[in-house]
Length: 501
Ligand SMILES: NC(=O)C1=CN([C@@H]2O[C@H](COP(=O)(O)OP(=O)(O)OC[C@H]3O[C@@H](n4cnc5c(N)ncnc54)[C@H](OP(=O)(O)O)[C@@H]3O)[C@@H](O)[C@H]2O)[C@@H](O)CC1
Ligand SMILES: Nc1ncnc2c1ncn2[C@@H]1O[C@H](COP(=O)(O)OP(=O)(O)O)[C@@H](O)[C@H]1O
Ligand SMILES: [K+]
Image 1: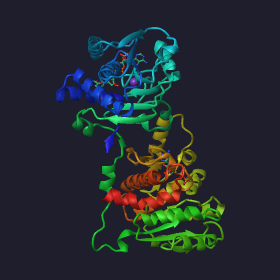
Image 2 (image 1 turned 180 degrees about the horizontal axis):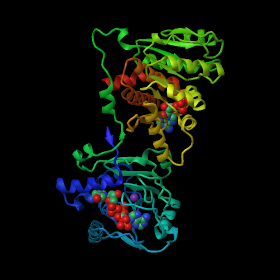
Image 3 (image 1 turned 120 degrees about the vertical axis):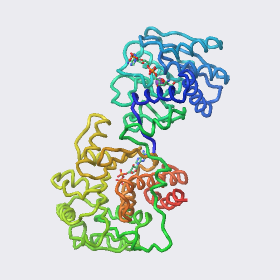
Image 4 (image 1 turned 180 degrees about the vertical axis):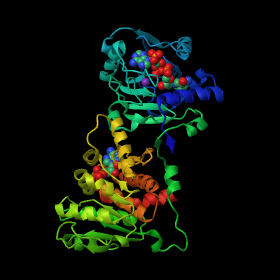
């Protein structure tokens, strides 16, 4: 699990590394430059012309070091120094001297709005104007240069952060819009937000050996989930285990015309190791569920087409509710009754969330330790609109605290907020999963894990990871475009097997 630190914590981390390794700061900068160049040379060969646009702080110092190293690798390199009032750092000056000493690289200064055609010969534009030192929106000549970079034909690659982009607060001013961002040591919080993609593009983190002990003990509530953590959460079965050890889950899902949602969830619950599964279905779903999921038992509703009746909650370890449920008045009443009668953690998704959004007086009935799995629209119905993704994150933490439950906000980098405010971003999954029914599969997985009495947070972290991993395995085999939700179920076995093996 990787902690996500703020820009000021990273500054302190740099300083701590310099003092305790010990290493002089120009050598640490050289390590950063080499890590960037290792990433760069793997992707772009030296037939590409490379323009490097540098500021005058340490980010600019990185840019100058990168220019020298790429020149040594035989790339045609050109450098622009943007001088708009930011102070010149010592390491910037050292790297400028080293570049001049190497020779053969044209270095031009920009002190006023340039003609944007200056960048037109460059296949690649490396952005090294500002990094984590940015403290306010850019102005003046910086704005002019950034505008030119954003309209240039070359592929933009940002060093550490796109210039103008804020790592820990909403970006309100102009920013470089990078195709790639190569960031040092740790991902920055804003990388995980949908609104940042326009600036950050695809991002990679390169290791520059900053002090690991400092990173481990840093105070943060944000973490990037990883495979080792998921692996450590997965429980192994033991020789004498029997189905009674793995819980009995109830799925309340599906309505006339949406029984497929129940089938997808049910299959995913079974593929996630549950001992027994019962599906509560309206009469319209009886033969569908019995045929499509023979391993599941049925609890049959008196209503022909929707969830309207009572279930016997005492029989079940957990309940997953929502996929394909609809919001009929009978369903609202039946859900209300279920919430009053079921004391254990539940998985609440889709229309069950929409019902909560429209009947907020029911929210206090959500059993503590439950998992809610909204996509952004469902989340907005629960908590109202937000101004920016930082506010969205705060609202997510707020809902988790209010309900003493885990809130899983779905999307790329699905975030998982715990009641204590800790929030985890998930690395697995791909845009091929943006297809109807993917979320129903997640509900099934989480229901299967809670039935096995996984701790709520651990189950949520593991389930979201496995869901995305299965989607990734499916996409590798079938391609993102043709991936469907059933494929995610199919590849769940591979995800479990690889993680457990
Ligand atoms: N040893 C290390 O520390 C390592 C650091 N590394 C690299 O250093 C980068 C951080 O460098 P940095 O701290 O020098 O800041 P940087 O982003 O270059 O900005 C320069 C100065 O601009 C100023 N400024 C801020 N906002 C402004 C604005 N809107 N308009 C105008 N000026 C503005 C602000 O000064 P201020 O005006 O606030 O006094 C700031 O100091 C980091 O991202 C990584 O690339 C790596 O090499 C690894 C080792
Ligand atoms: N671009 C993406 N990258 C990674 N995962 C994605 C992406 N788009 C969708 N997903 C995942 O697919 C699932 C979609 O869920 P949801 O929107 O509820 O779908 P549905 O309601 O059709 O079942 C979520 O788990 C989400 O994280
Ligand atoms: K930059």
